[in-house]
Amino acid sequence: MNDPYENLANAIVLSAVEDYREILQRWSLHPEKEVYLQDKASLERFFRSGWFGVLTRVDPEMLICKLCAEVA
Image (cartoon, rainbow, N blue to C red):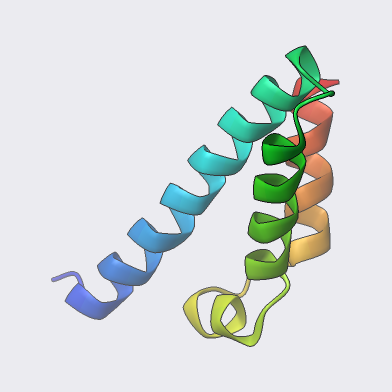
């Protein structure tokens, strides 16, 4: 049986990953829009935060690099 707390943690991380992918795509199309850069920086702070480390064992730098490579 799945642990509901683990499911919640996974859902939070996956939501942030989806948001980051979307922001990267929008930013790549409209690099002049400061709001996308701010949102990107905010999500990167989350990925590098202690809270992210509590939610998952994923290396945040590897995750950020892989997500950025998807858009490149």
